[in-house]
Length: 236
Image 1 (spheres, one colour):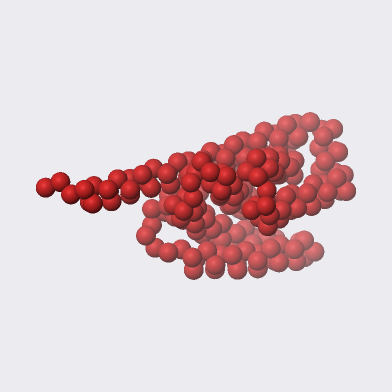
Image 2: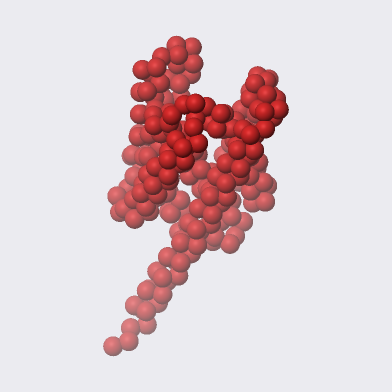
């Protein structure tokens, strides 16, 4: 027997699922675009000795870029609700380009083969954990909170190791870092999926949400890549 209420409920769920999937697709599209921008900028700088000398070897310039990156992430995170979606998008793209400037050192320090192999390992790990975060019915909030606390400890350990220059501590930091960003990838994906169910992906809020989601996943991917590269990469 035809049941209008049941039909409406199924139709509503189907429509909601489509909207969430569209939102998720936009998030990953922006994340992928940012990664491409970062990679292209990094390669361009790495293969131009004059630019390497100007940006990487000039300490005021290098630290100025680092501060600008941190500033952009802070402004995006703290003031996203006060800015337009277009402004947030421009800042996200600018951040990915600046990150390419600093990450050009990766192409100078590691072999192309190890960079490529580590990238594919990172992509596979990231994809698997993102899929887990998307499909699991388990609430990953506790895991996300634990990973965030571990991340704070990780940052402190990295700052301390700048002065200690301990090879063993560097190895431990990289191993813990891999676990932290694997966990954050799953958690952030679940959080983004939940956000997609509450916003209209075509609205201003939806567009800004997609950018913030892309930024979170972009940072997870980049940091996971760097941690794995430190463990698996072959230096020149």
